[in-house]
Image 1 (spheres, rainbow, N blue to C red):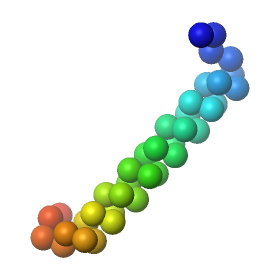
Image 2: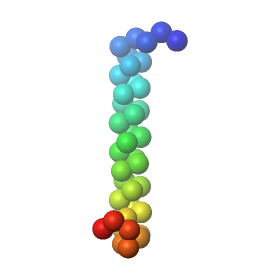
Image 3: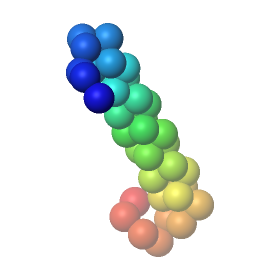
Image 4: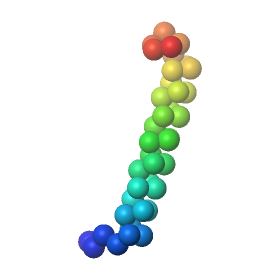
Length: 38
């Protein structure tokens, strides 16, 4: 697999989306379980 600037940008974009989704899930979990952290 050769890494072209486009593929690198796509990988970074997907990684950012994954981080955003994970943070959203963590916030929802924190709201559902107020006893844990917050």
